Image 1 (cartoon, one colour):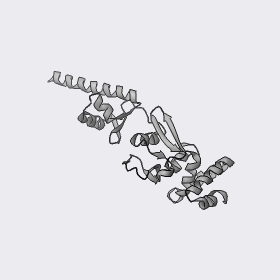
Image 2: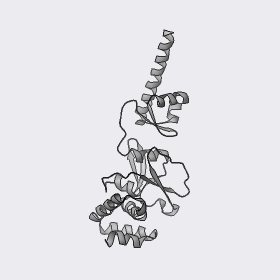
Image 3: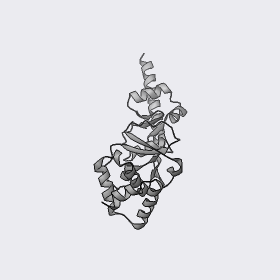
Image 4: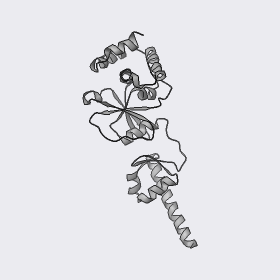
Length: 213
């Protein structure tokens, strides 16, 4: 009986060590495929979740908690990139990530193509905007991190989209975005924003919120 318990304990330690090694190689973000490839069974994966070693992000992705390491500050963007590599961080969330505002929006905003129907149920609140394919790829920045990459729109387009989606944004967040943007306006930036606003048919609204107030 005692030998059986010792054997079971040793086997569990082997599993813990194997998962820790995987986490070390993947910067703590682990996929189900990573685990299965290393011989960890679905049953063992479930046990690791119950024991608090794996924090589920979405089906197929986990954050390893066994080493006590904290997630990076931009973890929401990184996790969006892992769940849907084609998604783009937009509007107020993109403004926050680029330092235009210092208050993090309570809802994380993401853009996908209208034809993209991939599920994106995240463990944090998100708002998904569906963009026409013709304008979707304009002004995209790709951010590379040690944990993985993600996409977001550049600052000009992000501010423009905040104006488009004004009614969906917290007033205090919107006011800070407009106020801080006005402080940094340059002629070339204004021209690019007006070009985008004209293409998306909200040029009048932009004038009212930025250039007439």
